[in-house]
Image 1 (cartoon, rainbow, N blue to C red):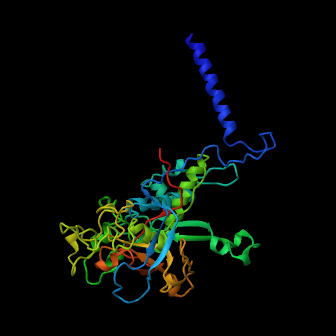
Image 2 (cartoon, rainbow, N blue to C red):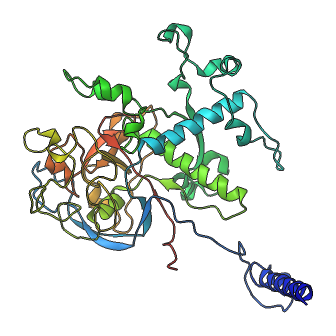
Image 3 (cartoon, helix red, strand yellow):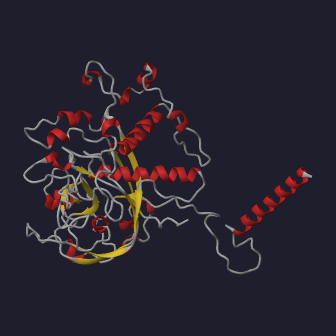
Length: 426
């Protein structure tokens, strides 16, 4: 009796599966009743909760100074802003996370040289990652084939064959929605708005020496990005262009996986706008000076609440001589770490002194994709949050500063955001 029952159960399961397939994802042309039923894009949508990210819900806040503008620059005037919900990295991008990007670029470049590719059904020749991940970098034959990626003999120290960081270049192709949406461009071919660029992506490790005159920082320059002890520390020495390239790679990396699983692709990872960053930093607390509230930089026990330059320069007093782990100190009410101090953070926004006077009050975004030939003024990007070498004023939620988009600093990092619906509560 057991075998017939099992067979019957299998038939019932198969029948239910066929029935469910007919209900979800059915084309309007196959229903047959002449009525409007809609055509779903997928039989089942699984919204992936991005690992290491926190959902920042939609809301309204007062963007601008919560305290006295000590510089009297009037570049941040108070204005009510509404922000759509988004996901944000709980911490700044770490050395380990950025290293995954570097190694992906290294392996993909090597695979292209070694012709480790496969033929796809659409006629393209993507990299065969099953072969790429097995490259034996210490094999003399492989090193000879990859000589174009290794430093030339006159640049070697003690004859050691090392990877040439200048050869690690990420190629990206994106659509410029801002330009393509203009009325005068409505009937122009799509190809005019596809932006193709190559970006050298290895961090500038020499910033630790360049940023500080008459200061011994060689150990940080040598080990900060390459030593495992600093793996969970925020990556630095990354320009705005490199941070943007990282976001584009992260998008490509996720969507390639989803496409391989025949699942719906997702929105693009990107840098937060200035308004999104400030809204996230406040953690739902309107008109407070710091992510933890305020008005002080210490708690009631006298402990410092962020990594910055206390007093007249007692750097180690807050627990870190330079940077600290990206998840150090208590998070704000949204669950975001180090929105003040540790490293300052790139945003996607153009820095313009009078921006608050004319920007929209709904998801404000002032963007300018400056070309290399444009004047420096057009290359200024808003930097927020203050850093380990900043005084307390720059830790305020409303404090604005800027750096040029091709600049690298030992106190400047970033975190990503992505536009996804909130995760379903199970």
